[in-house]
Length: 316
Image 1 (spheres, helix red, strand yellow):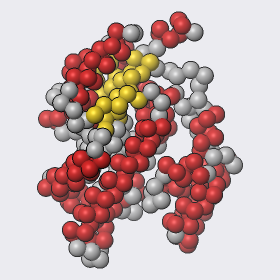
Image 2 (cartoon, rainbow, N blue to C red):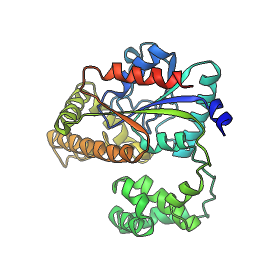
Image 3 (cartoon, one colour):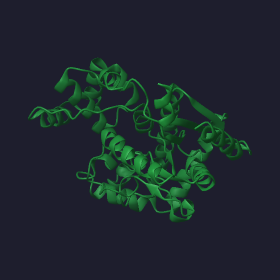
Image 4 (cartoon, one colour):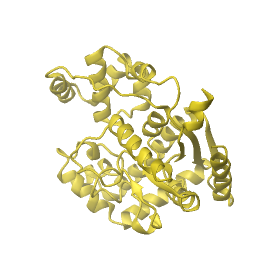
Protein backbone atom coordinates (compact mmCIF):
# COMPACT_ATOMS: atom_id res chain seq x y z
CA UNK A 1 0.00 0.00 0.00
CA UNK A 2 2.78 2.39 0.93
CA UNK A 3 4.45 1.75 -2.41
CA UNK A 4 1.30 2.59 -4.39
CA UNK A 5 0.95 5.81 -2.37
CA UNK A 6 4.48 6.82 -3.37
CA UNK A 7 3.57 6.49 -7.03
CA UNK A 8 0.52 8.73 -6.87
CA UNK A 9 0.81 11.94 -8.84
CA UNK A 10 0.45 15.17 -6.85
CA UNK A 11 -2.53 17.34 -7.77
CA UNK A 12 -3.25 20.78 -6.32
CA UNK A 13 -6.75 22.31 -6.25
CA UNK A 14 -7.87 25.87 -5.50
CA UNK A 15 -11.57 25.96 -4.63
CA UNK A 16 -14.17 28.14 -2.92
CA UNK A 17 -17.18 30.29 -3.72
CA UNK A 18 -17.39 32.76 -6.57
CA UNK A 19 -15.44 36.05 -6.36
CA UNK A 20 -12.84 34.89 -3.82
CA UNK A 21 -9.77 35.24 -6.06
CA UNK A 22 -9.27 31.60 -7.09
CA UNK A 23 -8.02 32.50 -10.59
CA UNK A 24 -5.29 34.85 -9.36
CA UNK A 25 -4.10 32.43 -6.67
CA UNK A 26 -4.04 29.51 -9.11
CA UNK A 27 -1.91 31.50 -11.55
CA UNK A 28 0.48 32.66 -8.79
CA UNK A 29 0.98 29.08 -7.58
CA UNK A 30 1.44 27.82 -11.15
CA UNK A 31 4.14 30.45 -11.75
CA UNK A 32 5.98 29.53 -8.58
CA UNK A 33 5.75 25.73 -8.75
CA UNK A 34 5.84 24.96 -12.46
CA UNK A 35 2.13 24.27 -12.72
CA UNK A 36 -0.51 24.42 -15.42
CA UNK A 37 -4.21 24.93 -14.79
CA UNK A 38 -7.23 22.70 -15.39
CA UNK A 39 -10.42 24.77 -15.11
CA UNK A 40 -13.01 23.07 -12.88
CA UNK A 41 -15.92 25.25 -13.95
CA UNK A 42 -18.99 23.81 -15.65
CA UNK A 43 -19.62 26.96 -17.74
CA UNK A 44 -16.13 28.08 -18.79
CA UNK A 45 -15.94 25.02 -21.05
CA UNK A 46 -18.17 26.95 -23.52
CA UNK A 47 -16.94 29.30 -26.23
CA UNK A 48 -18.34 32.85 -26.52
CA UNK A 49 -19.62 32.88 -22.91
CA UNK A 50 -16.79 34.87 -21.39
CA UNK A 51 -18.17 37.69 -19.24
CA UNK A 52 -20.98 35.85 -17.48
CA UNK A 53 -18.73 32.91 -16.62
CA UNK A 54 -15.90 35.15 -15.33
CA UNK A 55 -13.57 33.36 -17.73
CA UNK A 56 -9.87 34.01 -17.24
CA UNK A 57 -8.60 36.73 -19.61
CA UNK A 58 -5.33 36.39 -21.58
CA UNK A 59 -3.79 39.07 -19.31
CA UNK A 60 -4.82 37.20 -16.15
CA UNK A 61 -3.18 33.94 -17.26
CA UNK A 62 0.34 35.50 -17.14
CA UNK A 63 1.13 33.02 -19.92
CA UNK A 64 0.19 29.97 -17.82
CA UNK A 65 -1.72 27.42 -19.94
CA UNK A 66 -5.37 26.95 -18.93
CA UNK A 67 -7.18 23.79 -20.02
CA UNK A 68 -10.88 22.81 -20.12
CA UNK A 69 -11.75 26.36 -21.26
CA UNK A 70 -13.38 27.34 -24.59
CA UNK A 71 -13.69 23.75 -25.79
CA UNK A 72 -17.35 23.41 -26.75
CA UNK A 73 -20.06 25.32 -28.58
CA UNK A 74 -22.84 26.49 -26.23
CA UNK A 75 -25.34 24.06 -27.72
CA UNK A 76 -23.26 21.01 -26.69
CA UNK A 77 -23.79 19.15 -23.43
CA UNK A 78 -21.02 18.49 -20.92
CA UNK A 79 -21.42 16.33 -17.83
CA UNK A 80 -19.39 15.53 -14.72
CA UNK A 81 -18.49 12.21 -16.37
CA UNK A 82 -17.12 14.15 -19.36
CA UNK A 83 -15.13 16.36 -16.99
CA UNK A 84 -13.56 13.54 -14.99
CA UNK A 85 -12.48 11.80 -18.22
CA UNK A 86 -11.04 15.05 -19.65
CA UNK A 87 -9.29 16.01 -16.40
CA UNK A 88 -7.76 12.52 -16.05
CA UNK A 89 -6.27 12.82 -19.56
CA UNK A 90 -4.96 16.31 -18.85
CA UNK A 91 -3.50 15.29 -15.48
CA UNK A 92 -1.61 12.40 -17.09
CA UNK A 93 -0.21 14.67 -19.82
CA UNK A 94 0.87 17.39 -17.38
CA UNK A 95 2.44 14.97 -14.91
CA UNK A 96 4.31 13.25 -17.75
CA UNK A 97 5.82 16.65 -18.66
CA UNK A 98 6.82 17.28 -15.05
CA UNK A 99 4.17 19.97 -14.57
CA UNK A 100 2.05 20.30 -11.41
CA UNK A 101 -1.64 19.95 -12.37
CA UNK A 102 -3.67 22.67 -10.60
CA UNK A 103 -7.47 22.40 -10.60
CA UNK A 104 -9.04 25.85 -10.23
CA UNK A 105 -12.78 26.38 -10.01
CA UNK A 106 -15.98 26.47 -8.04
CA UNK A 107 -17.91 23.49 -9.46
CA UNK A 108 -17.65 21.26 -6.41
CA UNK A 109 -19.09 18.18 -8.08
CA UNK A 110 -16.33 18.30 -10.71
CA UNK A 111 -13.47 18.75 -8.24
CA UNK A 112 -14.69 16.13 -5.79
CA UNK A 113 -15.55 13.51 -8.42
CA UNK A 114 -12.13 13.87 -10.04
CA UNK A 115 -10.06 13.85 -6.84
CA UNK A 116 -12.06 11.00 -5.28
CA UNK A 117 -11.76 8.94 -8.45
CA UNK A 118 -15.50 8.51 -9.01
CA UNK A 119 -16.10 6.12 -11.91
CA UNK A 120 -19.09 6.88 -14.10
CA UNK A 121 -20.72 4.04 -15.97
CA UNK A 122 -22.34 4.79 -19.30
CA UNK A 123 -25.99 4.08 -18.60
CA UNK A 124 -28.43 3.39 -21.38
CA UNK A 125 -31.47 5.63 -21.25
CA UNK A 126 -34.62 3.71 -22.19
CA UNK A 127 -36.07 4.88 -25.50
CA UNK A 128 -38.47 7.76 -25.08
CA UNK A 129 -37.64 8.44 -21.40
CA UNK A 130 -35.95 11.78 -22.07
CA UNK A 131 -38.82 12.94 -24.28
CA UNK A 132 -41.34 11.78 -21.66
CA UNK A 133 -39.60 13.78 -18.94
CA UNK A 134 -39.50 16.87 -21.18
CA UNK A 135 -43.23 16.49 -21.84
CA UNK A 136 -43.93 16.15 -18.11
CA UNK A 137 -41.87 19.28 -17.43
CA UNK A 138 -43.94 21.22 -19.98
CA UNK A 139 -47.19 19.91 -18.50
CA UNK A 140 -46.51 20.00 -14.74
CA UNK A 141 -43.88 22.75 -14.52
CA UNK A 142 -40.40 22.85 -12.91
CA UNK A 143 -41.63 23.00 -9.29
CA UNK A 144 -43.53 19.70 -9.60
CA UNK A 145 -40.54 17.96 -11.21
CA UNK A 146 -38.22 19.21 -8.47
CA UNK A 147 -40.71 17.99 -5.86
CA UNK A 148 -40.66 14.54 -7.48
CA UNK A 149 -36.86 14.53 -7.32
CA UNK A 150 -36.98 15.50 -3.62
CA UNK A 151 -39.17 12.46 -2.97
CA UNK A 152 -37.11 10.07 -5.13
CA UNK A 153 -33.58 11.26 -4.30
CA UNK A 154 -33.43 13.86 -1.50
CA UNK A 155 -29.61 13.84 -1.49
CA UNK A 156 -29.43 14.81 -5.17
CA UNK A 157 -32.19 17.42 -4.72
CA UNK A 158 -30.23 19.03 -1.87
CA UNK A 159 -27.33 20.00 -4.18
CA UNK A 160 -29.36 20.86 -7.30
CA UNK A 161 -30.97 24.27 -7.57
CA UNK A 162 -34.76 23.97 -8.18
CA UNK A 163 -34.43 26.21 -11.26
CA UNK A 164 -31.71 24.09 -12.84
CA UNK A 165 -34.12 22.09 -14.95
CA UNK A 166 -31.36 20.34 -16.92
CA UNK A 167 -29.84 18.79 -13.79
CA UNK A 168 -33.25 18.06 -12.21
CA UNK A 169 -34.33 16.12 -15.31
CA UNK A 170 -30.93 14.37 -15.52
CA UNK A 171 -31.26 13.14 -11.92
CA UNK A 172 -34.86 12.00 -12.48
CA UNK A 173 -33.80 10.30 -15.70
CA UNK A 174 -31.10 8.37 -13.84
CA UNK A 175 -33.54 7.36 -11.10
CA UNK A 176 -36.22 6.18 -13.50
CA UNK A 177 -33.72 4.39 -15.76
CA UNK A 178 -31.89 2.53 -12.99
CA UNK A 179 -34.14 2.63 -9.94
CA UNK A 180 -31.14 3.98 -8.04
CA UNK A 181 -30.35 7.37 -6.56
CA UNK A 182 -27.43 9.36 -7.95
CA UNK A 183 -25.89 9.29 -4.46
CA UNK A 184 -26.03 5.47 -4.48
CA UNK A 185 -24.31 5.38 -7.85
CA UNK A 186 -21.59 7.67 -6.57
CA UNK A 187 -21.02 5.62 -3.42
CA UNK A 188 -20.84 2.44 -5.48
CA UNK A 189 -18.42 3.96 -7.97
CA UNK A 190 -15.70 5.05 -5.54
CA UNK A 191 -12.40 3.16 -5.85
CA UNK A 192 -10.90 1.63 -2.68
CA UNK A 193 -8.13 4.21 -2.87
CA UNK A 194 -8.05 7.74 -4.27
CA UNK A 195 -6.06 8.03 -7.49
CA UNK A 196 -4.03 11.15 -6.64
CA UNK A 197 -2.13 12.69 -3.78
CA UNK A 198 -3.91 16.01 -3.42
CA UNK A 199 -3.82 19.31 -1.58
CA UNK A 200 -7.09 21.27 -1.72
CA UNK A 201 -6.84 24.95 -0.80
CA UNK A 202 -10.16 26.67 -0.08
CA UNK A 203 -10.58 30.45 -0.28
CA UNK A 204 -13.26 32.18 1.78
CA UNK A 205 -13.97 35.45 3.57
CA UNK A 206 -14.71 35.01 7.29
CA UNK A 207 -16.85 38.15 7.03
CA UNK A 208 -19.82 37.08 4.89
CA UNK A 209 -20.67 40.73 4.13
CA UNK A 210 -17.25 41.17 2.53
CA UNK A 211 -17.85 38.23 0.18
CA UNK A 212 -21.29 39.53 -0.77
CA UNK A 213 -19.90 43.01 -1.44
CA UNK A 214 -17.25 41.49 -3.74
CA UNK A 215 -19.95 39.55 -5.60
CA UNK A 216 -22.02 42.71 -6.08
CA UNK A 217 -18.96 44.60 -7.37
CA UNK A 218 -18.13 41.76 -9.72
CA UNK A 219 -21.63 41.87 -11.24
CA UNK A 220 -21.29 45.65 -11.76
CA UNK A 221 -17.96 45.08 -13.53
CA UNK A 222 -19.53 42.35 -15.68
CA UNK A 223 -22.22 44.80 -16.76
CA UNK A 224 -19.50 47.29 -17.76
CA UNK A 225 -17.68 44.51 -19.67
CA UNK A 226 -20.69 43.68 -21.86
CA UNK A 227 -22.64 41.02 -19.93
CA UNK A 228 -25.94 42.24 -21.39
CA UNK A 229 -24.77 41.56 -24.97
CA UNK A 230 -23.73 38.05 -23.95
CA UNK A 231 -27.06 37.44 -22.20
CA UNK A 232 -28.84 38.65 -25.35
CA UNK A 233 -26.92 36.01 -27.36
CA UNK A 234 -28.03 33.29 -24.93
CA UNK A 235 -31.62 34.57 -24.96
CA UNK A 236 -31.74 34.60 -28.75
CA UNK A 237 -30.50 30.98 -28.78
CA UNK A 238 -32.22 29.79 -25.60
CA UNK A 239 -33.79 26.74 -27.24
CA UNK A 240 -30.34 25.53 -28.39
CA UNK A 241 -28.10 26.81 -25.56
CA UNK A 242 -29.99 24.80 -22.96
CA UNK A 243 -27.28 24.77 -20.28
CA UNK A 244 -26.46 28.48 -20.61
CA UNK A 245 -30.17 29.38 -20.62
CA UNK A 246 -30.40 27.91 -17.11
CA UNK A 247 -27.14 29.46 -15.90
CA UNK A 248 -26.77 32.24 -13.36
CA UNK A 249 -25.68 35.35 -15.24
CA UNK A 250 -27.98 34.91 -18.20
CA UNK A 251 -31.48 33.80 -17.25
CA UNK A 252 -31.90 36.76 -14.87
CA UNK A 253 -32.05 39.07 -17.93
CA UNK A 254 -34.70 37.14 -19.84
CA UNK A 255 -37.58 39.19 -18.32
CA UNK A 256 -35.79 42.35 -19.50
CA UNK A 257 -35.51 41.06 -23.07
CA UNK A 258 -39.17 40.06 -22.96
CA UNK A 259 -40.18 43.57 -21.86
CA UNK A 260 -41.52 42.24 -18.55
CA UNK A 261 -38.96 43.95 -16.28
CA UNK A 262 -36.64 46.94 -16.08
CA UNK A 263 -32.89 46.37 -16.24
CA UNK A 264 -31.99 47.39 -12.66
CA UNK A 265 -34.21 44.78 -10.93
CA UNK A 266 -32.70 42.12 -13.22
CA UNK A 267 -29.17 43.14 -12.19
CA UNK A 268 -30.25 43.05 -8.53
CA UNK A 269 -31.72 39.59 -9.09
CA UNK A 270 -28.41 38.42 -10.56
CA UNK A 271 -26.54 39.72 -7.51
CA UNK A 272 -28.93 37.85 -5.20
CA UNK A 273 -28.68 34.65 -7.28
CA UNK A 274 -24.87 34.88 -7.21
CA UNK A 275 -24.86 35.33 -3.42
CA UNK A 276 -27.13 32.30 -3.04
CA UNK A 277 -24.88 30.30 -5.35
CA UNK A 278 -21.85 31.23 -3.24
CA UNK A 279 -23.66 29.83 -0.18
CA UNK A 280 -24.32 26.55 -1.99
CA UNK A 281 -20.68 26.36 -3.11
CA UNK A 282 -19.50 26.88 0.47
CA UNK A 283 -21.85 24.16 1.72
CA UNK A 284 -20.44 21.74 -0.85
CA UNK A 285 -16.77 22.45 -0.13
CA UNK A 286 -17.32 22.43 3.65
CA UNK A 287 -18.56 18.84 3.27
CA UNK A 288 -15.45 17.80 1.32
CA UNK A 289 -12.83 16.32 3.60
CA UNK A 290 -9.29 17.63 3.76
CA UNK A 291 -9.87 21.18 2.44
CA UNK A 292 -7.36 23.60 3.96
CA UNK A 293 -9.20 26.92 4.31
CA UNK A 294 -7.47 30.27 3.81
CA UNK A 295 -8.76 33.72 4.70
CA UNK A 296 -8.96 35.36 1.27
CA UNK A 297 -8.87 38.82 2.88
CA UNK A 298 -5.60 38.17 4.76
CA UNK A 299 -2.55 40.01 3.35
CA UNK A 300 -0.49 36.81 3.64
CA UNK A 301 -3.07 34.48 1.99
CA UNK A 302 -0.92 33.92 -1.12
CA UNK A 303 2.23 33.40 0.96
CA UNK A 304 0.43 30.87 3.18
CA UNK A 305 -0.88 29.04 0.10
CA UNK A 306 2.66 28.91 -1.31
CA UNK A 307 4.08 27.58 1.99
CA UNK A 308 1.42 24.84 2.13
CA UNK A 309 2.10 23.92 -1.51
CA UNK A 310 5.85 23.81 -0.90
CA UNK A 311 5.31 21.47 2.05
CA UNK A 312 2.90 19.31 0.01
CA UNK A 313 5.38 18.93 -2.87
CA UNK A 314 8.28 18.19 -0.48
CA UNK A 315 6.28 15.28 1.00
CA UNK A 316 6.08 13.63 -2.41
